[in-house]
Image (tube, rainbow over all chains, first blue to last red; front, side, top):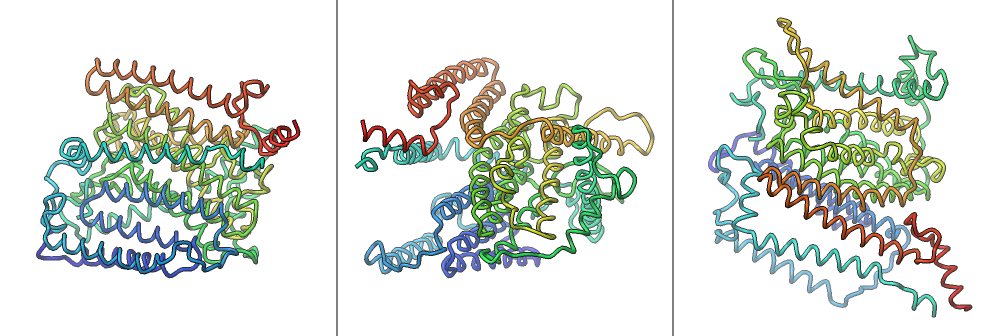
Amino acid sequence: MSATAYALPSIVVFVTAAVLIVVGAIGVLAVRNPVHAALSLILTLFGVAVAFIAQSADFLAAVQVIVYAGAIVVLFLFVIMFLGVGRSRHDHVEPLVGQRPLAALGVAVTVGGIIALLARSHWVTGATSVSGSPLVKGTGNVHQLGTAVFTTYLYAFEATAALLVIAVVGAVVLARRERVTEEAE
Amino acid sequence: MIAGADPLFAHGVTGVVILIVLIKVVVGFAAWMGAVTMMIWFERKAISDMQSRVGPQRWGPFGLLQTLADGIKLFFKEDLVPAEADRLVFKLAPYLSLVPALVTFAIVPIGGTLHVAGHAVQLQVANPPMGILVMLAMSGISVYGVMLAGWASGSKYPLISSVRASAQMISYEAALGITVVTVILVSHSLTTHGIVLAQGQGVWHWNVIRLGVVPFVIFWMAITAELNRPPFDVVEAESELVGGFNTEYSSIRFALFYMAEFMNTITMSAIIVTLFFGGPAGWVPPVAHLRWVFPILWFLLKTGIFAFCYVWFRAALPRLRYDQVMDLGWKRLIPLSLGWMLIVAGFLVAPGWGFVMAAAVLLASVVLAIAFERGASRATGPESVLAPVGRRPLPEERLRALTDREEG
């Protein structure tokens, strides 16, 4: 896909993906029922996957659906169902005082930062922007991604892996802690 | 742009190409709906044979039209939505079950390549560049059908069923993904077409033999658990959960779930054949103009064998207990598939590395076995008579232990 002339199919694909993403994202915020919010999140994730495919990032699109839609949101729903949230509780007590203004500030800073970085480009990958295919002809998505992950970004990759393992071990330790003392008393 | 690996789009998308794609979709869909009705008939007939019953016999020869009659009956039954149900999700769930089953079959190659009007037409509905990952993505999505159906019913037993389904399917997805990686490693291709081509040179090149039988066995078990087919159908354990996630469903929505289950059974048989048994590969007799028919026949034969095996499982094997299902997934299949993948990867680099990896995996498995042993004895206590089975104490047993300690 060239950056200058957009063909009609790619415009249709982009608009479809954008509508999916935006509708899903608004749904996550606007819907009261947490299960419906999780479903809206899946809609957004699918939209992002479609956008990935339009950018020739097929592998990323597949992984997006497998990992996020197929595993992470399922775990969200699992927790929501287990706790039975959204059926009876309607208390509006804020657990953290003043979180709303702080959240707004955080969003503003993050969005502003991302827009500034995109405008300046050469951010992480060195590519100017998402337009213009960085794919080398003849090699697949997976090949290039694998080469990048295991050579250029090896340390970042291994650090992420270590972080995830620490998170898993921590979660298991917290979950398996014996609650004998507090129940017996 | 989205064309990817399919040679059909190599010369641009013209009217003829679009027509070919449409024909592929329509023919594939029609043939497949026929296959599903046949599968339902086949399962009922084979099981009744194994149980010394007659089975369906009234409609059509050998009861072949029984499924059609059932479908018509279900269509005209009253469509009930429980008062406590979440109406939107309740109505959405059957389709979330059905669509992944349909989409997955699109990537299965059922034959070789045809040449029609100067276009190379692969006999599969779609050949996306991410190939077999579509299968993993769709099996991830199919969780939602079961899960949301159970939750949206607003009833307790379906809810238990949906919680079970989500935990079970996520657990087995890991083992499933790792075995698929093993296949991709030796095939050098993500596309189903490439995977089938890599196995095309004869029986000895089929992945079931080339990878050692272990990945195939792991994949088969994991995919059966993903499908919620017996012996892993704790989601639909009628002795514990009334009917499982579809207890509150009636009429055509129940039929959709029912169809999705059989569609998935056929699709996954086909996926097993594609990944491990060479897909449409097989002996082709030298007959002019009909050479393209024989790969399809081979494919149908192999898929039929696995479809029969699923029916056989259902008739022969008792259902696993829920904690056994989880133990098998996490403690056996995931470590085994991971270890086997490392060994295969080592042998692909060099035989020396293969043996190094095998030694490392052996060592790791010993450590893991010791860890399981210690964990099991901590959970049940060393003096417990139940310790060797490796069973977790029930909640009431835990409570009893606590009260005993208070008194003593």
